[in-house]
Length: 204
Image 1 (cartoon, rainbow, N blue to C red):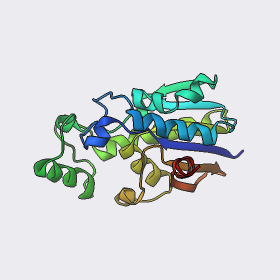
Image 2: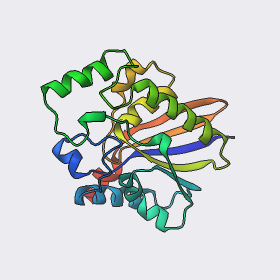
Image 3: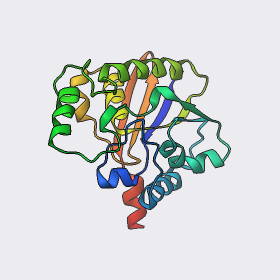
């Protein structure tokens, strides 16, 4: 049986706007722009017959798909898809020293590296693999999932059966959509970081 997953990143928060690290330790709300993005996504996809809405345990994901939840679609939260823990960098605006840490953890290819008190890329990948097995075995065949930026990059590389060194090629915008199909044991990425719902709404 074919399964279809609409996987989106959460809407904008003030931390996104100000380029402050959130990670899993900062449970921020959407700002006005984020709520607008979420509404644009809802307007475009509200007639899709989603059988479940899955989010992380962080409220910026809940708020992004709030209108779908209010429509009565069953909703569940999962720790496995919360944002990467950036340790002592969370809540701070980027600086050159933080950039060095970021490059060591994300760009060096040494994916067991971590920022102090944070997670490694391999640790995030492991929990995403666990979540992937879960959604494959669920009964629904049409699911909406809301996640986070770094999680999106790691997860799409995994689903696309690419080495994690390619994760930076998987772009993510606030409410950007990855449309993913699963059939015969294989995932196919149909759309990548699609934001047509925003451009269409702005021009209408």
